[in-house]
Image (cartoon, rainbow, N blue to C red):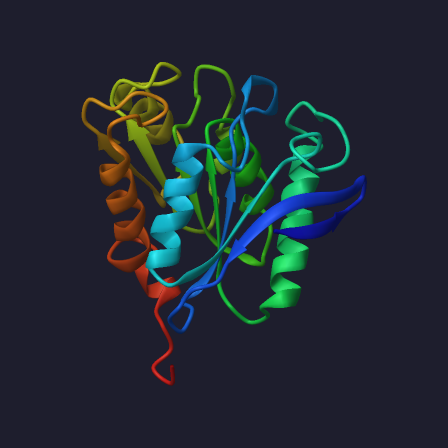
Length: 215
């Protein structure tokens, strides 16, 4: 457990370093704080696990007002500053590595919004985009790879609905639809992990996170 300095005090976080030469850093953002979302959410945990196994140092943290993090709920706006605080701490601790920002549900909206215009962030990963609740037009012309992993039967935006949203945005956004999966990916965590792994090792972001030959 680590404490990350933030404008409101600190963020409670969990860091897990790669056992192998790191291919990058990955920050994973959790779902809605007012609906039980924490960094211990299963989809968040499995995503971080997949990234760690793929060679990333991973950082999960609790948004303001969650767990031991100070502050209070910021309506998805102030939480963007939490992501930036996490990036500040992470890049200072491990300078020079490419960065992936990932998020699940509410965390996808916050994490992708924080990362889309941040020059430190190399690529983005959204899980279970709640397109029925939030707008994602900010991804238009992101200028960096954006990958979305969506349950085909997600209650807040099924595969076809999310495909329609993505089709209206700029190029560079890819989508993987997991058959039969709902919003929380219950009973489909193995498929979720494999989809995450593919994106950073074989997919659109693979070249950006290649392990240096000198490693």
